[in-house]
Image (cartoon, rainbow, N blue to C red):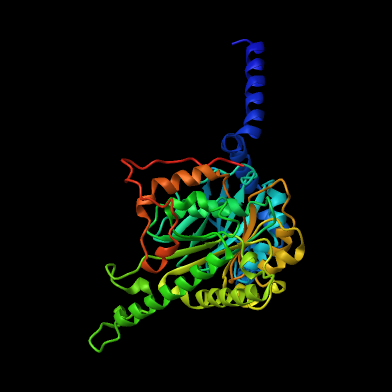
Length: 454
């Protein structure tokens, strides 16, 4: 093969790699980025750890033994030991055993320095167990074009909603975090987040209840899969009363069968519906409130009475309903004390927090200020062109940047029609059953839909 041919092939290969870097970053990372990152990490590991001050002084006995055997040579400081390297389609994972005297917080503080030292897009630190942490390195901006992993976690009430910036799926597990608050300005991706929730919940054995006071423009297309739907504040008032009545009936059922009789085994005693036998366990209910402010606003004395009643019922559901399988998903543009009495009490019960782009810092503080101040800063830095990007946090103080896959209204409506036969009938909510909720026949075979990207 002539030199000119080799040069032409090299030029073509370089051009293809440059195109792949923009159009298919995962392919470029696998072919070029991963080998280069491995070389940089392994060739400069000790030097980088020392430069980032992730070192500890060696123990006295090692210094003494070294002096006896090697004279006056200086003993090198201790650094975290690499206990595993695992390449991924989006980055690299290093499992480190921390040297005695180091804590995971020390590695977190040095994450930005490690990122620049190794030429990696981002570095995230996760504690695996005491003394062991995992560095999750990403080679490119995986939130620029959201592609969900092929293998997703599953559970009776677990829904994969978005992709985290460390490459892991963001899972909404209602058994771990029963109630959640989602905030965001117009066109921030808040509605897309709710669509992804409904799309993931539709195939599960769960009742979906919608409250959409914008005359149902957001949730009416999902009517075939909704057990109940309220599209005005008056309907929402009645629906919340019905939900509280259903909650009380479930508590009566739980008290009757929770197993506190003298002959019951200790492990069979339960305080929530998940400990009941399957044949007695009522179906879980997820209540999706599209715009919470519409339930708080009032323009007349009569509206004020209705508002106070609805807020009281919402607070009761948030405080008590978890044990009987009723969960709240509250969405809004703002949710603070300016909405009136009961707003702060309700917000305090919503453990999960997801904050999209906000028009003001105060809104981000409403959702994340009691979780982590760094999360507030991250939420206020979301760009307007990155719709769907949000900061997800919980009461433990942990938070992460996430982005939902772009999902059309028609796509979610099609999924709701496909699984309409799973819509349960609940007697207390029958008066609010949407007219379009006609069960469809079960599909012959399941379909797999690949989510679009932003």
